[in-house]
Picture (spheres, protein in one colour):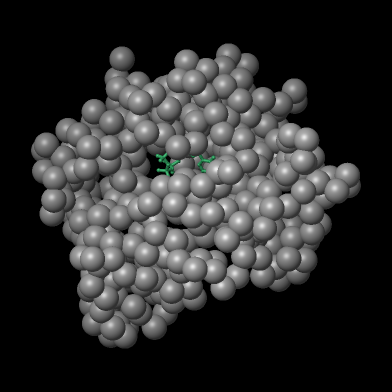
Length: 365
Ligand SMILES: Nc1ccn([C@H]2C[C@H](O)[C@@H](COP(=O)(O)OP(=O)(O)OP(=O)(O)O)O2)c(=O)n1
């Protein structure tokens, strides 16, 4: 059954490409179309700009780049992007969306886990990562590595895009009904409000060593975003252990990888997105949050017990995070149809059935 509204599944994304609604300067990579999203690829140059900017209603991105570019970097053979600098990269994909179809972008989970700040920009945009219905034109990615310098190249995939027709977010009541039927978040008393279901932090740690998370090191060597299992964990991360107090003091200048207390489940006919918890309850937040694919944590796709990985920062002041503190919400949307491939089923998925897991770039053991 296909719904008229909802998030486009893999087959419909393939159809967009076939119909010329989605174009690319090179044929799509075999695994570029995911169950409910498309990975976006970097083009052949990066422009180092003085500062981040918003195109605004009157301007194309290219107009502003003329004024703000400091220098151009060739990405054909790979180049290092430094921490603290802002780069704009024209993407290989461009859009000619139908009038009833909009899109939204997000860093890939692997990108967030490396603390690479990325946002998609389009011509005349007044918001980042939101592509208005009917948009026709190029896509650009703003990139600013925050903790580690990174090597990227033409074709690297740092961010992803979801296409949607109409509005199909589940209301609180629909979410509770779905939770009763499918157990979305493994918690005895689900906390549903504001259209989302709460996720809380695990600071008790799992396993005999009581590992609760990692803190990013400073002044490290570079990470190649296209190489899996190539880097030693301890060169880049300081492991954090539970000391019996189930709390962690977040330092405002540091970046943390932590894990949700609850296992998460996205049934095949739905897609989810994590949104930061109301920042008014504290100065901390999940920094990248991100898309959750249909099939993530789904028993039928080998995902029972999958936790969500949380990239956490405190702003302004040190903050004591306690075990079970709510840190984000998962909002669920209808898919238009069941994807041909679910997350975790032969798609080379990296994070199905994960516990506390660093990005795929690091070697375990
Ligand atoms: N803060 C987040 C965001 C996402 N995820 C999970 C749910 C997603 O379904 C899964 C994969 O997300 P992406 O597709 O963004 O990740 P990658 O493309 O980097 O990984 P993969 O190689 O698995 O496709 O990671 C998570 O645990 N914590």
